Image (cartoon, rainbow over all chains, first blue to last red; front, side):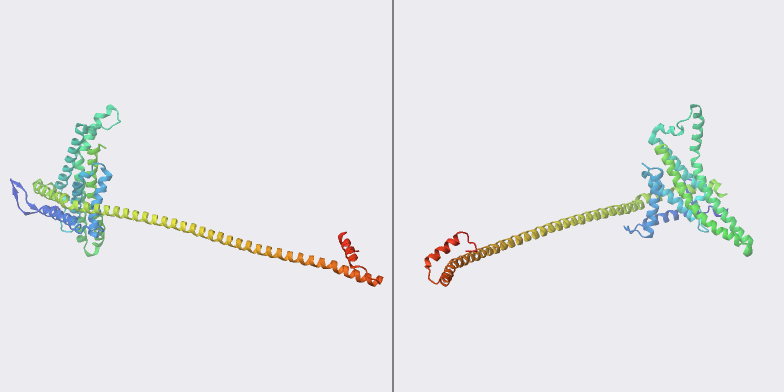
Amino acid sequence: MHQFEIKELIPLEIFGINASFTNSALFMTIGVALVSLFTILSMSGRAVVPGRMQSMAELSYEFVASMIRDTVGKGGQQYFPFIFSLFMFVLVLNMLGMIPYSFTVTSHIAITLALALVVFIGVTIIGFVKHGVGFLKFFVPSGIPMALVPLLVVIEVISYLTRPLSLSVRLFANMMAGHTMLKVFASFVIGLGVLGGWAPLAFMVAFTGLEVLVAFLQAYVFAILTCIYLNDALHMH
Amino acid sequence: MPQLDFALWPPQLIWLLICFTALYVIMVRVALPRISTVIEQRRDRIAGDLDQARELRDKSEKARADYEEALQEARARAHSIAQETRDKLNALTERQRAMGEATLTSKLADAEARIAESKNQAMAKLDDIAAETATALIGKLIGSGVSEAKVNKAVKALHQSGGDADG
């Protein structure tokens, strides 16, 4: 589990709390810098007919915009900057993790849980601000017999409360499992040597391709689930 | 598993807060407005170009209609001019024909009058010839002269009784 280790690069302490600049912080900084440079520099031409980089930036913009349009619909555009930032942040961190010897920030539950809690708490606040106490009706499914209501309310509340957990664990587990798997097969390559190491090496090549797909897919899933939760809060289904 | 080492959570969370906030602010302040401006500009430009194209099409459509109309008009005028010319020519020929006819008629009348005169003259001479011949014949037949006045009278009477050939 060497690749998941957090190393303190610049030890820091604020009010007695460990705030060291770690390798995790370094890769988050690189990620933020990459996303910012990508979205700002590619648009520096502001061409009406876009070049390659500009089309990519516009494509990612339209991608998130249409995701919000399709899942949230009316009133969703207001939250576009947050969801765009979230999607690009998770995507760039997942992708950076695919580079050998790099560090995968999203393979840490602390990061994914924090992001998921921000989404969960934010969405819950939006729900209560938008509908007041009426937001509680969200936990009472319509059109069911009265006798079943208490049971279903309990189930609904539990399913609602587990949202941040499932959201964070999905991303963290996918990232960690993929990287661990690659590590295990890499050790097979070494263990089997020049004669037998080709089979796990071929598998690793294919699996790396799959991991790139997973890295994109998990960022997409994280963003679209955020959109779905936002839609629940705004329109109550 | 380093993920569950809670002592390492605070530095991660603090830097997550710093980095994500920075990213969000950069996106909201700088990056996203740029992208949306460009996309909107393009949309406006395309809409403007489409409008212009529509306008030009309308214009060309109108020009075509004008041309068709002018063509129609010219065709109508050409037709009327042709008709007029034809009418004029018809009138001219008619007049000339009428004039020719009148000349011919008058010539015919003259000729007829001349013929009638010649005939009358011939007729008048015929009586004299008849009387002369009759006198000569009678002189030869009877041997003695007969008065010319008597023969003339007889010829006249014969002539007036019907003009039969047996006289």
